[in-house]
Length: 162
Image 1 (cartoon, rainbow, N blue to C red):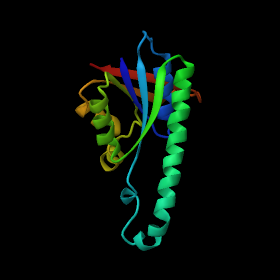
Image 2: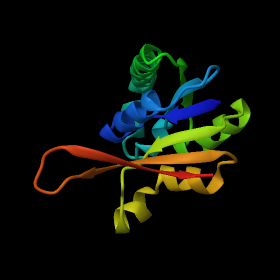
Image 3: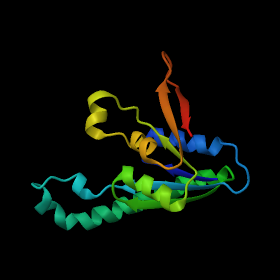
């Protein structure tokens, strides 16, 4: 089975990573840990542009290096759980890059953490997991994190779509 695990630097991605590491593993399972770097144009306004141009290359290099460290660390944890895993870094829009990579690679399952955005925040920021569920051509497992009442522990709940 080919499992795609898109991650960012959130606790939600860490829970998704632990979920994949704990899955039953018949021989031959492969995991690709994917991080997508959004283009800087998504973060900078036109007013900032003249001041940012000379620093953009350095920022991109730093972001790429940090992303490689993150996916390689996550892939290492999965290899420690006896899974075949490698880290991948791509640039672009996270929603479409995840779906495109899953199609190109022939993923059987995408495991994605959910930030649990609701209301206006979800409308303004969008939901990567919702887009993946809607547009993926393979199964998707959404791993959710919820806080247990009156305790500081986090509990995971996952939902799988076939």
